[in-house]
Image 1: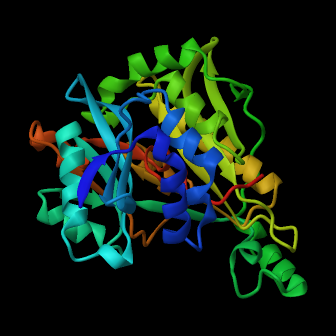
Image 2: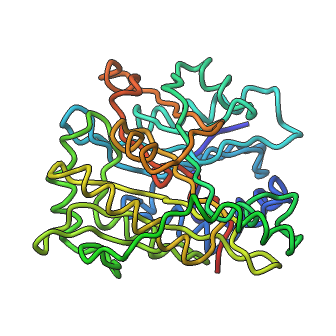
Length: 351
């Protein structure tokens, strides 16, 4: 049994392994998705991808897969990897392969991030290797057309419409904001925006234009919608929206604010404008509910002001680093959104 970096010549063999390992999730072995995910990410080195496989002879028995990211930690730029998948074939479990895979990743990059739930096996394994659960990721949910969101009645049209009508008094009507406009591409203004905004947070994944473009404009079979808030032509904030595909009844069950970020100048005004426009669009499309996953005191405060409720969320941020642990292991240090993790990446396609 050996652990080694994935060779691109063995990509098809790995995809075959993933097809078997994830019979109920064909996207994990989809060649276009995998290529986008690991080869096209802006920080990827095709000769040394942060993907390792456990092999028994020539048989792939498991893998750990991550993507490279850069993180702002205490004002310094640091390389990191974000673990997206750790799996060992049923036939090869209880042999310590998962631990060996994680250790291979640590040798490659000592700063490692990931999002897990306690329902998975990975958190206990990672904690045994020194990873720290920094904290739960708060989820906020606002019901808009409850009849479209409640599973038990979403396909019962008469009852669905009655429930939607009952929620009409709590659906505020927002006018379009002249300072908010649709973003078609991530240009140099986003790099300038991040350069001026990053100092607000001790720990945050860097939001450079090339990463945003890869994540939200080039992801296969998905459409994200981006809005930006401007004052005197200057970008002061943006939000990325994801609308699920409509169901058989024609209703959109949920939408998400996948990513949202703001400049330190007039932050409340910026956040409020972006939330208002996000809600206006969601209401216009009769979306059942709008969800946001975020760690940030100011965003959390403004979401509650707009009537979003904190709901139970199993997702938790895990980190391991040999340095600057007082910052990286403190949830108050972090700025994190749904878009930073694999939540948005593994959301079902909407095209």
